[in-house]
Amino acid sequence: MVEVSIYRGSNSESPRLYLGRLQGFALISETREVTVPAGPVIVRFEGVASGIEPASALVKGIGIDEKNQNANLLSQRGLLDHFTGQQVTIRRTNPFTGKIIEEQATIRSGSDRLLIQTDQGFEAVACTGLNQTLVFDRAPQNLSAKPTLSVRIPDQPGGTYTMTLTYLASNFDWRANYVAELNDEGTRADILGWLTMASSDSTSFFDARANAVAGEVYRENEDYENTLFSSGFRPVRYQCWPSESTGQFTEGLYQRRPFAISTAPSPTARRQESDLLEGPFDGGVILVTGSRIAQREDLGDLKLYRIPFPTTVAANSQKQVAFIQKQNVEGEIIYQLEIGRGDNFDRINRVFRATNKEENGLGEPLPSGQFAFFQQILGLRQLVGEDRMDDKAVGEEVELDLGLASNVIASIERGWWDEKNDRWEEFTLTVRNASPLPITFESEFLDDEDYEHKRFNQRMRKRDGRPLWRTEVPANGVVDLRYRAYEKEMSD
Image (cartoon, rainbow, N blue to C red; front, side, top):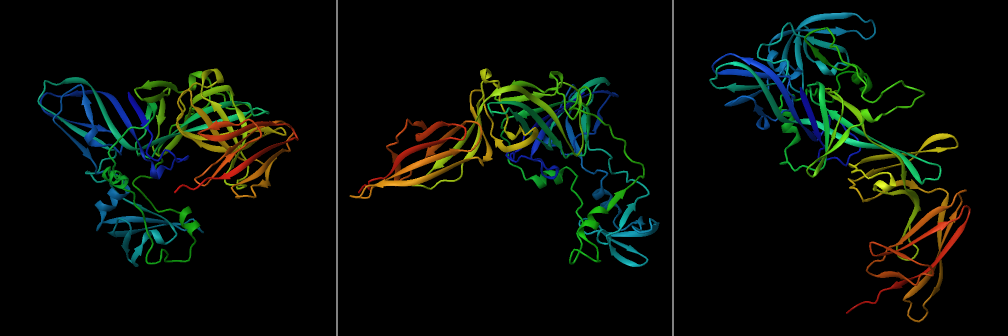
């Protein structure tokens, strides 16, 4: 049995996950039945995560007095390092005729600039633009096919033990993504949240109990590249020299025919699964039921989302699992405008605002993530806005940006001013609603160290100590607000 709990990385503000730069980590726990002979023995745990942090490894069920990580892995870099100076076979495929040619070659240098020697001379392999592969006749005995952690058990009577190995590993991360479907009036929304879990590790964990942990966990800052390299899985990055090209081929062709190294021609079988669907796929609708939604649990100051069914955390992959499903969440679309000194303001912005309370249809801790809003417009489901949300606790206000308004405009006209000392000017704010529905409009007035807004001719509210005008603008209607901008008196 294996359990994988994934923690978010320090770059969780990024809406997307890139397998090459995952900044999170995982707490992995595996339970195995192990039969050992009497006396001191070495137990090898094969198939651990390649990003394992050996210092964090803890073994329960039996006493140990030493642990070691086997970083000599069967990988491209490991093969190149081992076979430098030795003969291998290079297999080339002509992209025009499909003819395969094999010849003997000696690896003269590995690492970032792979150089081989054939009867025709020296060649930078990755720079020809051809489809070519190095074939090795054997795998070195000192290279392990799987990441391995070995532990030394001191003198004991022997027998079968239930051992649990728990450790931290890099190369994991997760994000929250939300999809909201607005009703025609923009007063309610159906919200579905997805956990996007990613692993850039080389090890897959099949039929695992997978969890995502929300919240911040302080860890000592580590250099990402050093952590990756210490795992034994430093990538081989080929560079063409001296000008990144030794022939007339395009970058696109080079990318379509990547250099590869293999020890066996047979493909690796892969499991196929669907953690997103339950029931038939009907007309493009994804049916999500309660039994397929990750369950939230309190974990001290953190929140744990437990996937309620065995799943595979596959190597170098991403997957999504639903974790929040709320219907008819009460909210409103508000047209917002910020007014600074005099008549300086930007265009009107549209936001969706809701309060995270149970009586409004929410009442769930919401991990930070990307929101996408959709709405039926003229019979078509259209994207109306995207925005990122910070972590929101129960009871907090949620406000998400939907973009600039196109059917509501505002203008400001100058009116009277103080002729005696020129300390104030009067303005009129006019809001026009060209839509067939009434809208809620808010204007916030931003005072600064030199100017402040006063003498409004309508009732005002306060938000964060600033004057706020909130009003309803009728369908195809117009509303006005008069106010003054005062220059503050200078103090000695």
